[in-house]
Image (cartoon, rainbow, N blue to C red):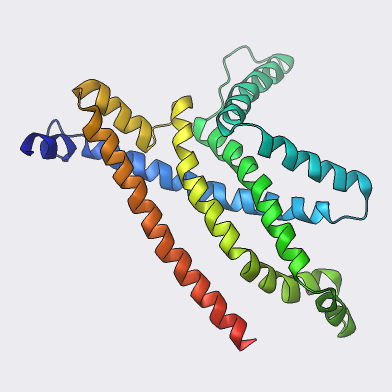
Length: 237
């Protein structure tokens, strides 16, 4: 028992600092990916409702592709494909050195497009749950399309979509473990290195399990607080 505590500690020979840095990377990646995924998902949902057939088709193809591909495969395609593209571009511009894409950026983008493909469906369902009379009412009092969306539709949209987006956040938090495959020092990679070096696989992977569970529980508390606040604001309206 004392040996396990020492291995997980922050003293000499302990892996505490490495695991703590992995937690920071995991949380940072999830928080950085969330706004990217939400923004893309929102505009894809708008595209799915567009009267322009080409825009609607492109939005539907986007969600079909990124919902159909395994997340790990999408990560590899983005990471290695982007590196090849950047290298080729550098050669065209006369740059002879080696260009590499940052694994954090690649992970954020790959997870962001996957998240957005699912978020777009959540947003689309929320849009369909809002009566058309809400739009007409905004136009009737002199609001522009943009003002109606921002002041009338968005507050309702967020409240309706929140439960679905909360579930996607939990999935995103777990999917961050995939970035260990491209060398990003997240929770899984740091505990994996510690397990191989110390030969205490159960201890460190069990620790990783506990960390992810704690992050999920903390996320649940935050999500519950946001939902209660959203419900109160809805009542006031």
